[in-house]
Amino acid sequence: MKKVSFTEMKHGTKEDYLFLDSHERKYVGDTANRILKFMSGLNKTLEGYQVSRLEHSLQSATKAFKNNESEEMVVAALLHDIGDELAPMNHSEYAAAILKPYVSEKTHWIVKMHGLFQTYYYAHHLGGDRFKREQYKDHKYYQATVDFCENYDQGCFDPNYKSLPLEHFAPMVKRIFSRKPYTF
Image 1: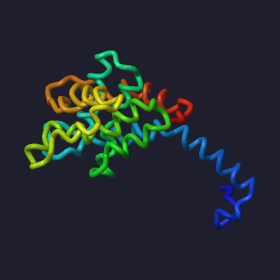
Image 2: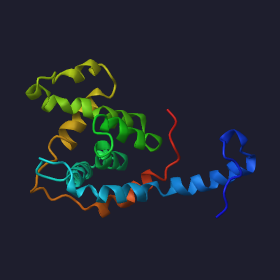
Image 3: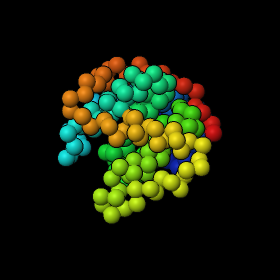
């Protein structure tokens, strides 16, 4: 397999970087498939809850889908906790970073902030401030994030809920991740 000529980036040529760019484009084009593969493996996590992390995500996406949310929001609901595995202390920022190039500013903000907003439901049981989200009460996406947490996160731990399978959402994920990146 062909390789670049450099061992230090500063010594790369235009040809080297054009070659790498062609590989990068192919790799980026397969992002949706890597995400779906990762999601399919989340069936043995979320210790202590009544459902797996995958089932939680499927319930979230199914509820958004059945509520006629935009495809972007359905995918955001599906992926909102994708960061739990590798970044449990800042999972929402991790998920938002994955989605950022492909979703609107509003959807990005909702996913980025859902972790903090979700503490409304439990922080007081652990000695924390359940109203910490109020610092954002004047933000233009505050209510949308409250609604997201209420409708598509906090109530998605039901072992009896009949969620749609991951395969149902795969075409949506592929469409979102094939979009031209947003710049905001």
